[in-house]
Length: 379
Image (spheres, rainbow, N blue to C red):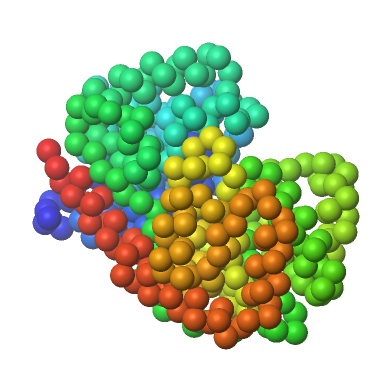
């Protein structure tokens, strides 16, 4: 690894990810900062207030952009700022995290920077499931620049399955999965509140992530345990009018606690007295090829997991005996396991310990960071 006295500058750039993003800021930047001068240019996040600021933290310099939901808005207002940050920073390496930045990436390359493209979703599979930012022009633009990028840039994939879409590649690549950060392993094991049974959910809240199934299951659980609770942390991708029209939501809305989007450290503080972490995905788009990141975070925290019975997820949960796999469409089965969790606290403790051990041995960020650094050093 190169000397600290001859550090290269790295720019981690996204027009979508927030400056609190746990992968970019909490993992990648921290792994790079001992060896590079790291600059992050990220957004204030959905619902955040824009402050044009630059702050230094742990040798990482962060610039924040305003957040816009639609691509055309980002093209007009954020991409020019991203180019300005590049010209001001003049990084040796630019690591981009969203495909919409591919046109700018060719400008960065032309100006002398090495470009690394990170693929965090299979857009080819995901476009049909999108409700916005999926116009024909966007799709044509993406396909053209994506094909050209394969010939010129290095790539990082967060899942093994995404690589199948990207063969062959002209430049080096790495699969760097989004496994759990080691900091959660030092937290005390959960001590569930058996008087007030509570479950934990962190992530985007949507029907694609089986929130409809979860509501139905909670209705069933409530018939036996009227005071059951579900804590939810993340952006709500379902309109309140749609929720209010749902009979299942009406039955259990008093049992739901919506915390909104929080940093991981704030959200995970509430996990200490919960029974299990829920991470359900329906097999739509690229979800069948993807790990829900929260799965490994739950395991690191010592929480048993309740996740989908997709082959990729069963291969983690069942061998390590750290939770349950159920159909994301089967509310009865989900409710059965939730009730079982309430009634078997000793077995839950063992599952939590098994999950934490699996993270220590297999599913930790430190192992993935080695692959990240190796790719950065590869010519």
